[in-house]
Image (tube, rainbow, N blue to C red; front, side, top):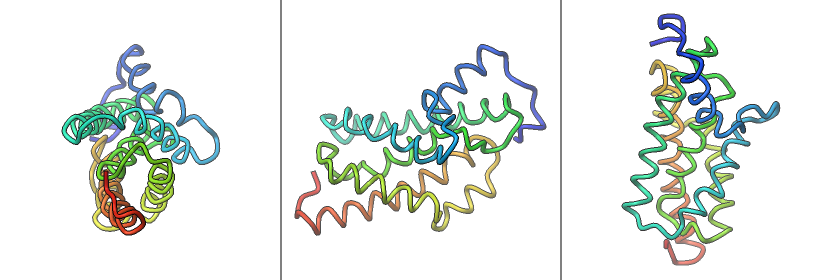
Length: 167
């Protein structure tokens, strides 16, 4: 599924998909849109801080699934593949990064931000494989989910080491 093998979505569907894929417009930031997308996710993770692990996990999975669909449709509308404007993948990856630690803790939120950004750029295996090998929305989003899984484990270890607390 590449942008060139599918027809363009309707204008209404494209509008909704672009709004989601750009995380409400953060993806239009001209410099470092991925960082802007991750920044959008920080207050979202904080707002979800009172949820238990199951509810937080379900919301994170919903963001991933909706993000995959929106990224695919937005790329079709723009006739691109993995446009830099698409930052819902950073939102999803950051939410995954924050899954195992207290989202009330501003140190954890900030450390998760930095850690996820580094991992998103480095793309440890198999993140790079997802990025390069999977077509469409899954390829756009799942590499960030993998980076988020790495981030969740490393952040949990770091916070546990620093404070002895994980939640």
